[in-house]
Length: 292
Image 1 (cartoon, one colour):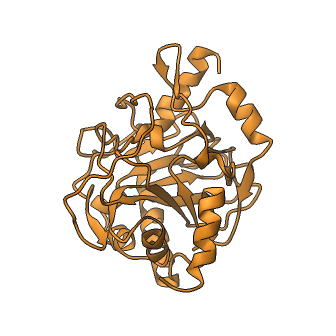
Image 2 (cartoon, rainbow, N blue to C red; image 1 turned 45 degrees about the horizontal axis):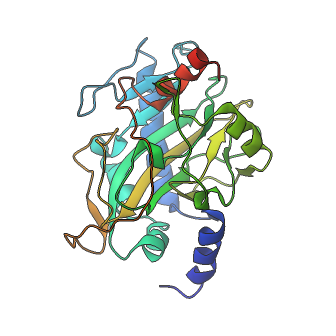
Image 3 (cartoon, helix red, strand yellow; image 1 turned 90 degrees about the vertical axis):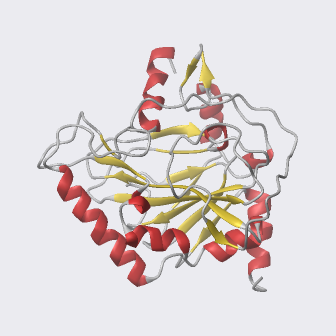
């Protein structure tokens, strides 16, 4: 472990997140953005979700209300590392991964990856939620790393995190028998008052505990805000429900080695609903039907 990492580890344990500059090299940032631009260009020829992941759901999820040839509104690309060697190389090695290993390691595996986009005028927003209830494991050492592919500002829909909530309860994401993928409106209202916006230059990242409450507003600017999101976990954290983003890359060792052991911690959480929609944006849209 690098000596200067201890301060970051202490901050992570206290707040549940870390802002990390230069998480991607300049070459990685350029390559991923070139790949992303090609996918956005490809989306202009589609008027519905397209592509296919392992379980048959679409890989490319569009904001259909605003997506046009002139104003493409791709909002999610699921498991891009399955179809792009550029993205796969980033999953396997980047400047933030050693810090993940220092926090939850030494043995780290890949759990999932996706690109979330907020293109200008797309209107995409994310209700407050925790990641862990989507992907419960035998222990809670799950890390979501959000790599900034664009400069993130207060105007283009930055990630909003609520410090310290990773040490609090796991909130229900079920409401009136419907899995909405979001916390109760009262919890969200209280959380927003304490939320901190994660802004920074392209190539930076936010490392976030799977239990941390977070969300984000719509992109109100003329600038894109795209994130390459990679989820890592301790190798001895074993899934308790089917992976909602199934991929051949799930379980790939990225640091350390396979131990063949299971580590369990005591907690209680409602199992998630396996999504029928292209992404969790579809699940969160159900919030309207329960009055959230």
